[in-house]
Length: 538
Ligand code: GLC
Image (cartoon, rainbow, N blue to C red; front, side):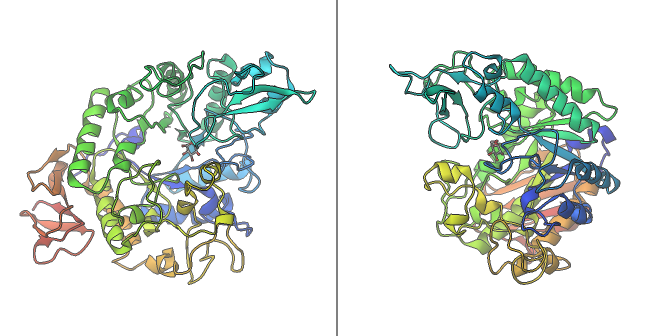
């Protein structure tokens, strides 16, 4: 029997479902997903078998970056609903056993946020500007940006302001889009404001927060030029961050059921990464190393080993993530010649064998759901949705695409509204006749929740079964089993084992009592290529 963790340790092995509110379900009938839509579909999430739901930002926002440009951290955008509805959603979720994780965006605000408006209206050197990174430009006339940094979305992360008299003024820093000015985390008011925002959502029943761009908040106060190899980096993974997160942990721990802090931290050094997960800092952080690896046995094994080795000394559980709202959908990625994920080399539009990608995505699901730690599912992953690579260019909204001058495909292709039912758009996402904010492809009729429900061969039923079995049979110690080079084989406690065949030939199954679940039919005691199986000892 699997050991049951303490209820307050739920996050150590939870399956957490990511809802991108704009694209989940449209209750209001305007083509944009909303909280009413989510509330009506909570039973779907409970039945799927996840324990918590992480919502991408739902705050008032001009939507320059899909809501990651926040104008007010204590309210809900009218396009999504109201604060009262968010409170109801949190309460209704809990009744169904679903905890809510809210997305916190501390690195930057929207240029429509009152603080930034006040800063623009105030003079250089004013206290209002101190909350951000305003600097004079370089060059004789201040016409050059203050340093040579690059925006995470490409291009220059500095924008010049205009003074009240119309003359060119100071520059402000935005590591992302122009509409996302970075906050100055060396300022005590920035810290106290975010501590208050945490309490605001924790007081409303949020079980935790996902912390956006959590490795970028602290900047070298001198804002020096970027020199390759400069250590510490002027704005990534700086030591000052740990003090910030310790103060957040104290707040999270002050609740009767301690709240959970989940970091979005893109730091490739696994030991530096694990420093954020020390017992008085964050609880968990997304495992982007695993997400980015190609579908190759050596690569995946190396990632699993490095992950477990880095987490063990700090006592934090690993997380397993295959995709999210920023990266290429798994069935597409795994169907390409190049199966890794890399922001700089997206392989967009390259030949894709979708049936192969789907087989591998099914196997990857069983792999990630059998590993020790928590797991994140991105909406539509459980339906096997592919990346939509042929969205009409004029409908694309992602600043990553827009700022690249069209060379980067952006992230809209993984944010297309979900298909729920029916055989043509909007597939039950919105009332018939309403056009979703991003167009859905023809041919998604076979991928709807309705079409897949009850079909034992569907991706949805695979996820449902896997999540159910995971709760009862997947727990405890992890150990590799001897296997061929192209097979990943491991055990958990209680006689459970998982085998994944990443090679080109079928492999024999080891002696076992029962096949609990397989991502494809084992044929004659053999596990086919690109297939995973869960076994139980007799
Ligand atoms: C994170 C989010 C991404 C957003 C960026 C800026 O990486 O996941 O969607 O664009 O931060 O907030």
